[in-house]
Amino acid sequence: MEAGDMDGAEKVLNTIKFPGLLYKPIRSAYYTLRGNVAMMKQDYDGAEKMMKKGLDLGMPMKEAEGASMLQMGMLAMQRNDMKQAESYIRQAIRKGLPDKENEAAAYLQMCSIMMNKREFRAAKDFFNRAKKLKPTTKQIVDQIKQLEKYITRIPG
Image (cartoon, rainbow, N blue to C red; front, side, top):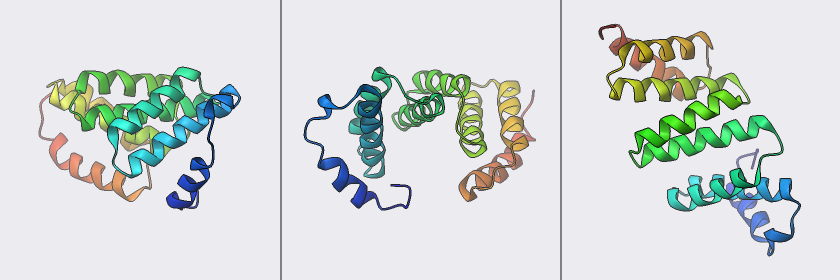
């Protein structure tokens, strides 16, 4: 999965016939990986179901829990459930994220949620936090550049 071979990762995951027999932390990781594979296939309902199973079991590493919460927030945004998305993303930030790229993505998502809610001061605050992290991922950098043009014109 780390090498980007999602088909190979899915084949390995499919060899596990009885996930209920796995130790709890490994079972949690199994469901999280299943959720990631479902997201790659754009099966958002299946991804949410698997991610929730993984979160309910508890994550072996706290950073993984934050990353899973962030993904749940992204899924909620896909469904236009902004209230739930905000809740998940706030939890992700609170629990901690594995790297500055994920953290910047979380702050940018919160910025867009705050702009939708017309809470412009909070939106600017989240935007500035994301910018301070100096992310290097192309999509995040592009998103910051696009938002920067717009955010200077909003009041607050």
